[in-house]
Length: 208
Image (cartoon, rainbow, N blue to C red; front, side, top):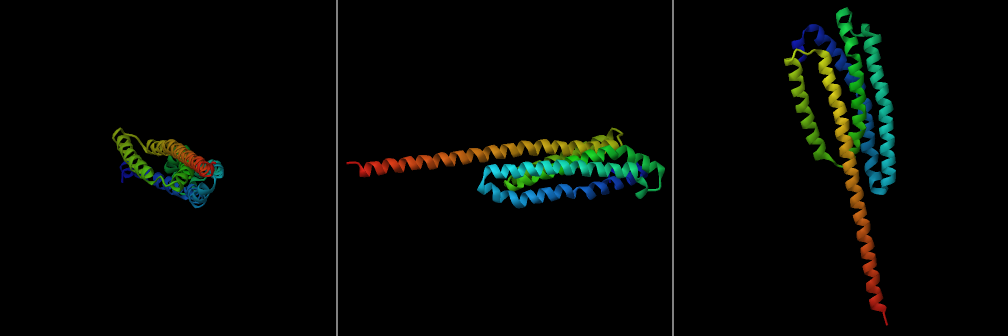
């Protein structure tokens, strides 16, 4: 509805860009689901192995994000005829193409981070983040439209939002890892303290 106020050309271009965005976004969803499936079990077994899987997922997401972003942008620049016969719409698609690519890079990487947070049961934090980000995006869109901005500004806002989510989720993941490490250290210390207490009690019992 907001994009419709920019005119038929921008609306047509936006529909194409949005379709490509959701076409390539499953790369991020797939990484997220994979992390959610395998990480919880590893978290119970070994912190080292779980962090290794997490790192592998992030590296894989980074590679997939480049592929998704480059593919989406290349389709808009190199083959606009697949989507429209209008030269005007094609020109707008070419202008927005880099922003689509950047948005996809951010989305796919965010998927890996979000999957790791879901595996660690950081549900309240994620819910708050999504509510906050949605409100910020809605505010940003209104400001863009009120200031006479166009489709490029709207997709710039989307790209910035996705990279802001990367920063948010990366911070949240480091925080969750630190809490997990502290809990494991406290548990190990408690076990060691109990062992020492048991040894002292046995020494007292069997002392001559």
